[in-house]
Amino acid sequence: VLSRDAEDYLDPNESAPVGELLTYVQKEIHEQRSCLGVVSTLVMIAAFIEMLRLQKRHAAVYEVEQAFVFDIEENANFAFSTPFAMGHKGLQDVNSFGDFWSWMRLGYVPLVIAGDYGYSEMNPRVANLSSQIHFTGTHPEPSPKRGEWMRFNQLVTSVRMTQKTKPRSECRALVKAGAEVTPFCYHRTYAPQVFSADFAPWTLEASEITRTQYLDFAQGPEPLEDTLLDMEDGCYIANLDSRDCLCTTCNNQPWLAKDTTEIQVSSVVLNRASGLWSLVTVSFVFDLGGRIWKRVVVRSQWSTPYAWSDGTIIWSLVVAQSIWSVMMLVLTLDVIRRTVSLRRKRKVNKAQSPQHSDTLEAIMVRAAASSAKLLKAVVDWAMVGTAAMYTVSWIFLVLRVQRVNEAYETRQGDEEIFRTMESVIEMEWTERFLTSAHTVVCLVRALDVMSGQPRLAIITRTFSASMKDLVHFFVVFFLLFGLFGLMGYTLFGRDTEAFSTPFMSIWGCARLLFGEFEWEVLLEAGRHRMEGIFFVAAFTILVSQVLLNMLLAIIIDAYVEVKGHLNSGEGKPPETLWSQAAEIWRRARAVRSGEAIRMARVRDGLEVMCESVGAEGVVTLAEA
Image 1: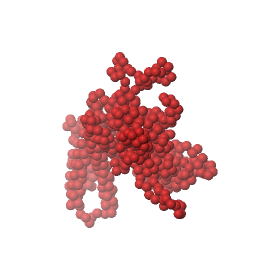
Image 2: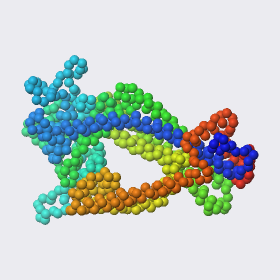
Image 3: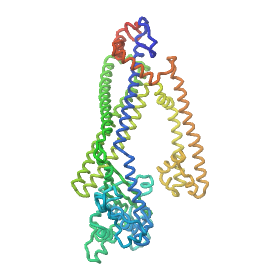
Image 4: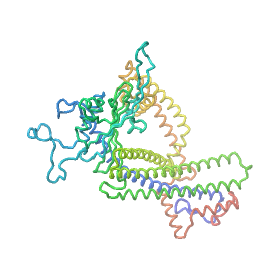
C-alpha cells in the first residue's frame, strides 16, 4: 500500500489493524473515483453545452425574432395626414376599435403583404411613375413577391385573426332601482398581470376561440381591404353596395363587440436565409377599465435542426450529441449496477447481522451512511431521468418540425400549418423546461462528485457546516421580506404597476434589493412623498445592508472553519486535483506493468480478512 507521495513507502513487515487498512483503501478508492468522476462530469457538461449551443443557435433566432417585433412596432403605422405621407400612430397607439381597424387596414396588412419596393420620397422625376422599383440585370426577379416580408422572410400562410369572448351577464352591483333595462356586464382579463409580468400567451387555446377569420394575401389589396371593412361594420357597406359579404364569421354583426376580451393576429413565416420557422403573433387584451394592452410575441424553431440553411450537416452537433449520449448511457448502466449491488448487500447484511446487538450509536451511524447513499442514488437517478425526458422531448420536437415541413411542401392548407406550428412551439417550450431541469441536476451532481476532492469539496462542506444558521437566518429574512412586500402592495399598489399585485410587489422588493429599481416612481406614489422615502430607507437599511451582510458573515465564518479542518488528521496540506490525477496515473501504470494490483482487489481481500480475523486483528502489510 502506497501513501500519497512516491517516496513514502510503508515497510512490508510493519503490522497494522485490518480495519484501519480497509478504511484507508476505501478512502483512496473513493478519492480516485471522485477525481475521475469530476473529469467525466466536466466532459459530459462540456458536450451538453456544445450540443445545446448548436441546437438552439439563440443569437440567430433572437436576430430574426427581434426584426419582426421591431418592424411591427415601428413600421405598422396609421393616422396618415395625407396619402403616402408619414403615419403618426403605431401599435401602441391602438386604443379603440376604430384604431384597431385603422392599424390593420393601413398599417399591418400593407406591411406584411407588401409586394413592391418603393422609391425614396420627394423625387419629382418619378412622381408620375409606379412606386414599384423594377430590378434588371443580375436580379432574377423583377420585384419582391407578394407576401415577402423584409426581403428574407416569406409569409407561408394567410393572416389569421382569432378572437376570444366572454358571455355577458346581468350586473348585480349598484343597479338603479326601477330601471327599465337591466345593464349587462362583461368579464375582462386583468391585463397588467399578463403583460407587465411578460406572461402574455403566445396563442389562444382552441376551446377559447370564438371567431376566426383568414386574410389571404393572394387575393390582392382591394379584396383584403373589403374584408376588413366588412369585419369592421358587420357587412353594412357590403349590403349597401349589393356585394357579397367577405367576413365569414360576422353574421351581419361587427366582428368586434363588447364581449371581446382578446384578439390575436397571427401568421407563419419562413426565413429562407436561415431556415427558421416563426409564428408571429400580435396580441390585444382588453382590461377591466377598457384599456387595450398590446404585445408582439414571436416563437421560432429551426426547420432543419441538424443542418445549416444550405443543407450542410452540422457535424460538430452530431459529435457533441453522440459523446453526451454515450456518456449518459454509461452512467445509466453504472447507476443500475450500483442500485442492484446495493440492494443485494442490504439483503445479505440484514440476513447476517443479529437484530438485538444494534446499539443506538451503531444505528445512527448506519442511518447516516444510508442517507448519504440514498441522496447520491437520488441525484444519479434524477440525472438519468431528466436526460431521458429531455431526449424524448427533443425527438418529438424534431418529428413535429418535419410535419411542419411536410405540411408546407405539400400545401396542406393554412389550418394544418398553424396547427402543426403551434404543436412545435408547445413541444419546444416543454423541451426548454426539461433542458433547464437537466441543467439543474447536472449542477447538483457536479457538487456531489466534487465532494470527494478536499479542495473542491470546500464549497459543499461550507454550506453543510452553515446549514443550521442559514435555515434560521432565512426564516427571519423571508418574514421581513414578505412584510415589506405587503407594505409596498398596501401603500403603492394603486399608484404604480410594480406593486399592483402581491407577487409583483415581492418582485419589486427583489429588484430594490439589488439596486435595479427606479425609486423615483415610489416618490410620486402615495399621498405624501414621505411614504416612499420611509419605505426605501427602511428596506435598504434592514434588508440590503444588515441582513445581506449577516448572510455573508455566516457563510464566511463557516468557510474559515471548514478550511481550518482541511489539514487535520494528516499533518499535510490536502491534495490538489492535479496531484490526485498524477497519483491515479502512477497507479494505473504500475498496474499495467504488473508492479501493483488494483485497489479494488486490495479492498476485496481486506474485507475477507476482516471477516476472518476481525477489524481489530493485526496483520503485516505483506500478509495484507
